[in-house]
Image 1: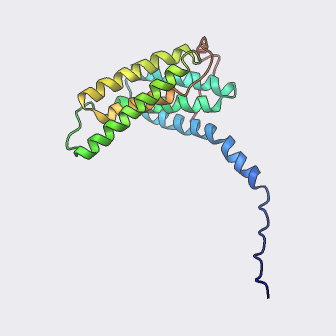
Image 2: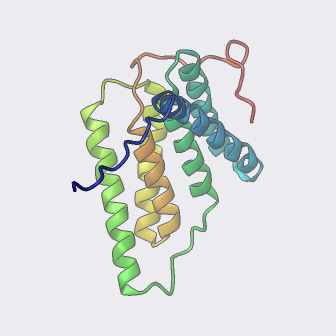
Image 3: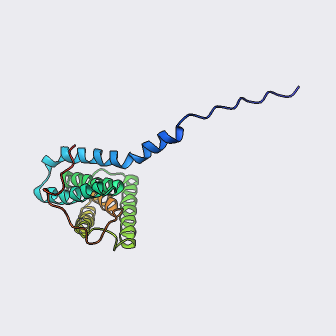
Length: 185
């Protein structure tokens, strides 16, 4: 007697449809979550940092209006890292094991290298307003890392890495608040 064949499972109805919906909304959800965290952090930030974050949120809003949800999410992710970096302790990290310090150093170098490579590769494909924020974040990351303020350095480096994903017109201008409504958390 031949062994019984395993029963075929019926295909799930609409499985692909649900999967597509989840992925299509991922970047929009990410933007919403980043904006919510930025709103919560804003009262703890210096005016200069808030100004840089507003540049990023204005560009994110414009990106959303033009259907560029991933760009908006990356801009807001960069803003969130900028916010956390600005409130992280500037003090030198103490009591780090050699292993932890090596891992932190490797992660920092990886982030900066990845950001730099992507930044150069797509140099002419991003809004000019992003360049100043990126350069400021890289400079601040290097300064913090040199002082041993590793948490601060890693946040700035992650923010710069997020900005290296941003694409758009080189000449894209920021819109003033009257033309573009700010996202609400």
